[in-house]
Image 1 (cartoon, chains in turn brown, purple):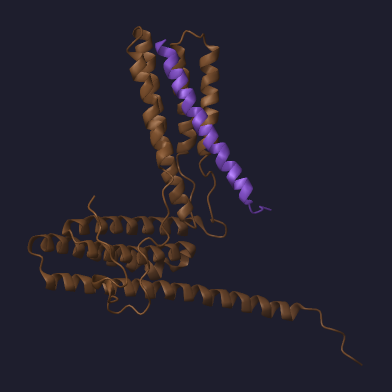
Image 2: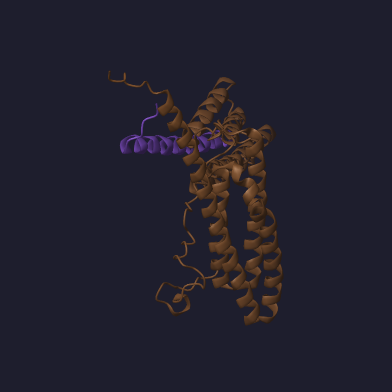
Length: 301
Length: 37
């Protein structure tokens, strides 16, 4: 990882706002959070290393049980980390389906199984390994929690529409990842930051579409064709720019990014306005009906 | 109805999680050394 040059509002490189931006650009870290898949899940990978070390100092059966326990515990650690990441993805979305595989719960069970197998070689009979397994599974569940087991925000949304949205968003995310990946090849920090900003704008649109699947038809082109085009342009640009550092190509690409970003932001705003109109209609209709049905005070004689 | 968690409750939950985690690590180490003995 290379060091990143310090820059700020008053540093020469960043002093002028990007052309065509009427509002201050979003910070690249806007809405991002530190991942919880950090030291805790990493420790789960390291600590089981004690099993293969001790396994080689015993008899053959100790070796087999020790190595099996190690394998089970590492698998459990991996599932734990995947589960944490899946839960974060779940938390980041407003509308989300529960994970297809409850990874963290599987990890709890596997941890228990690993401990039980590992304790088998201790010559402690069968009761203690089972107890160790149960305790280990319980502790794992207690420290990492269960997976989200229910769909979130699916009330009043038909599953078919949401599925379409989820697929479209997944496709969009894939394009974004490809764009971010490709721009790394250009080796230009500023452009990377620029692309990050565009990605943030695109994600804002994703969240907007997720919150109202009816908007998908309007946003479809943006999630598909435009992002694909942006990806192809980025790939071509990165290859070219890595070779010849052509400032005019850079300027053209920068302009493209600015266009894309403004367009995406404008479209997101339009989608939100659309929601507002829907809400207003709904409220108006309901209020009218209420007024019609309200008991009238008896007319004065 | 779901009530908002107080700060103390959140901290307590975090503490229990951390405690459970370190107990789990200790258990793994204990069981791991059991086999070689």
